Image (cartoon, rainbow, N blue to C red; front, top):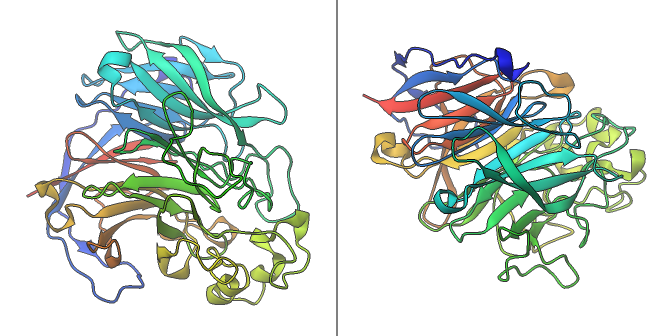
Length: 428
């Protein structure tokens, strides 16, 4: 889709009363939130919108995976800013940026000091070098929000999957992670994926399967405490494919949402220097050989095993091999359904859900069958344990919920792969 033909779809407010009903959960007790949700389509006809980031006045930066970076102003006007190779309707394009499979332009984060430095950060796939990489770029936005300049690649060495592999979902461009967020400590947190490479998750030097914690220039946060020999930018490692990270509003603790293999999407409370326990290398715990030395989709997980047997064979968090690994606090009831993004609801308008975590679930199943496309509300105890999981009853058609972001107006914004950015506002 070219941006010259795009129209901003600010549709009429559609107030609908909604309750909530309990989703499948490992928690038996369920509560009902009685607030209503009002729904607005903020933008439509987008090309796989991937992420959003807001200024306090409601200005919204957003990415489209195969197009580029744009901004929606409070007036509703949309300006294209930086396009990828071949994209149309942008004032400037970066010829090294491209999309392929799951790769492309992904996470975006506005600098907390935007008012003084005009900086925004974007994570995208680049062919500037071979093998290709994923990069975190710092850009400067001009005064009238019509363009960007001064690109600086502050992280340039996150791996990208160059070649197809001989296992399910073996195409190029897989498992890049991709979420970019500023933490309350002022550092940038960047999530990365394993690129279907069994060596990556436990590698001390390959920057896939990690959560990086860095400053605005890409330097390691001095407080990082990875194991000896690890790249100092490493905050946590041993992840599979983290596409969600959010910070507890009371404690500032980073919490990730992560895609599982044939089982067990996970939510994990991060510990500085911690291991998430994903290790898909062959010949561990009697696994034997696996296609392309990657056991994450080992064929004997696919035939004749239920999800619990798969989890025992190829655990998402291998606590037997790594007893000190960070244990997940939620595993989607042992299902793999594409838990992609995370945010916290804040404000009295959310009633019982004030302070609860929300995760967007894309609903993927065996053979690509849609399953469970939804937003789950996860209420936590003071010690960050899961006490309740409730599925939002949504006043619109569901989709592949790629991103959930709390806006400055206290509403929940969500992007779906089908081309929409929705706004959900609690009301009476």
